[in-house]
Length: 300
Image (cartoon, rainbow, N blue to C red; front, side, top):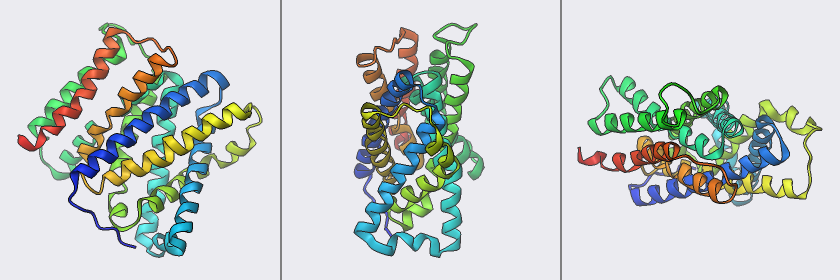
């Protein structure tokens, strides 16, 4: 089935803000799971992708029948879907949760929101044009915010661990990739089909480890928290976020994803008691500020 994109930016803004908020909730829950149950990011990503993908595909079969298989009848689209699953969906999950594991949810979500900067640079290179003036301002503000976050305001040292910094920056690159890769597929197919299959495909490399990791202390509480991550923080997050790409540009979608660190920070500080220094808060605010700077883009 072909899904036509509509000129409805308000709907796109609603989708991406809601998706970003739910992703922030998911990150905070993941931080709690890592610190309490000591599971590995690989295991959590495997569980998340397999079960979230399965839910979406089963839902699609129940409502649309065999239409969910249409994407595989077009060779080009099938290859694009496989590449999106392995090079877009899977890295975005693994890099993000590794960043949460080696730092914390607020830091990971802030660094992940550097994705729009990579989108801006990619678009500039692909179009062989310099970034717009407003995009350049966004880059400068976001980079300074990242510096404050990474160094805690000290010029001669890093406040983050090298692994935390690496996975956070990798999450930003992965965010740019999965934002750009599925746009053509989303114009032709239901977002549930694209996201569901991409999750299942992206989870394949982790499948063996997911079901053979005997060291994971499964109990009712862990299953409950994993369910929150899978359903609320994955199924709905990706549906809302990727659906927004049908209505607004990739750059705007990426910038509005800055609502993720806002949610993750509020929850991590108030619920988990994660410490937050003034410099880290300043860095987070600066990166979030790019949301509003980008919103002015159409005027300059």
